[in-house]
Amino acid sequence: MRAADVQDDLTQVLVTEEQILAKLDEVAARVAADYTGKELLLVGVLKGAVMVMADFSRALPTVVPMDWMAVSSYGAGTQSSGVVQIRKDLDTDLHDKHVLIVEDIIDSGLTLSWLLKNFASRGAASVEVFALLRKPEAAKVQVDCKYVGFDIPNEFVVGYGLDYAERYRNLRDVAILAPHVYA
Ligand code: XMP
Ligand code: MG
Image (cartoon, rainbow, N blue to C red; front, side, top):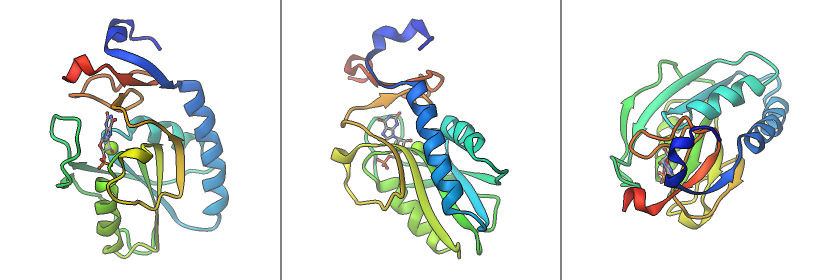
């Protein structure tokens, strides 16, 4: 996975870059078919979704507009607070757009359920979610997620955009962070 300097911080690789890229091709084919003839807008949630947006958008067969939103619900810890703050809003008017939110991970689901309500109030024609990762055991609220990459165990993971205290985002694989790093 390169970044050999952090091997001791990781206990296990859960999803490899190869598996991710193959999955993105699969999901991109489904999305392309589902949105044929519709005005699709990809909305990435910063910063975790940067890698998945970069690779997923390029797996699509057509050009597609994208926008970004930055929200925060975590602070520096590993547990969602449920209190969502907009750090950077969209630049795009969602009116009549078919929005696909691109997320790195659904953990408690609190961030996405808040985002879905927020987007619904902006007049989008439809709003769906693609989450690369999902932790079914961590769900505090159910989120209607149409496209899911991988269901993973309830462990704190890093890599492929996911961070702990802004580190590890540039790892190519998704790996479990060793508890000694954040304990
Ligand atoms: P919730 O709990 O609201 O989580 O579904 C939303 C956001 O929290 C981040 N998150 C994680 N980041 N490893 C990370 O590096 C994790 O295991 C993890 N779980 C949640 C992530 O940004 C997600 O969008
Ligand atoms: Mg995120």
